[in-house]
Amino acid sequence: MGKDSDQLENMTDVIVRQTDELRRIVDEFSQFARMPEPDRRPTDFGDFLRGSILLQESGQPNVSFTLNLPNGKLWIDADSSMIGRAITNLLKNSGESIEEALKKSPKRKGEIRVVASQTDRSVVLTVVDNGTGLPEDRSRLLEPYVTNRQSGTGLGLSIVVKTIEEHGGTFSLSDAEPFGDGAMPGAQAVIKLPKLKQTTAQSVALGKTT
Image 1 (cartoon, rainbow, N blue to C red):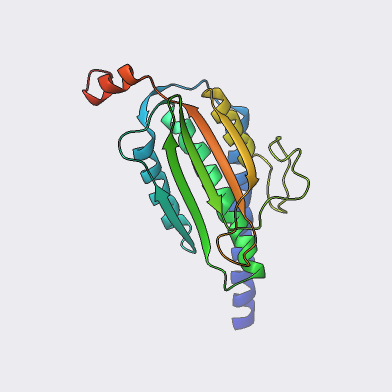
Image 2: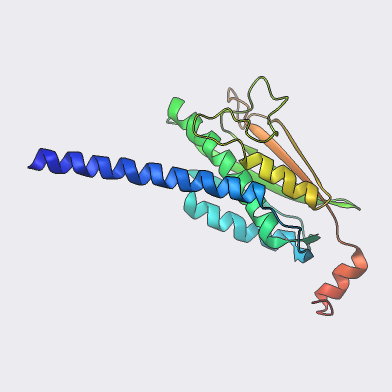
């Protein structure tokens, strides 16, 4: 009886995992196929990033997150829901890469470093991880349905790219500098979004813009 009970429990666990995986795949396809036009509103990107990373810290306990923000506000004109999904997908992608790296090197400490900055015209977000890095053939890495992971749909980064482009920005991937001597290079993602005009940002800060 005990053996049958254990087998039933194991089968239940497998079914739950497969159901969760199917739900994730369906969600990704739905996000990509039904992305609406952005409903842009003035958003402090720095404050937005704090909240996004706080959620990821609870969801990825084996990963250490660091966030580096400049002084002052980082105003962008954005659909916070769409940008939120894009940032979440990007951070989850880095986390999955770290998980694969930890399977090969269990003693490695997973880390994702997030840095935000701004220029006269852009707000720039750089996300660097110490995961498995980018594949040798990266020419189609950002295309839909292309993935180098066995369980991936190839839509995570495509959703990021499509969202950023819908907001008038750019997205790029490259090799990251190793986090220490002898460490393998991970991946670096850079997002550039148009910076909100100073006059509009000042109106928002004073509470004059809804």
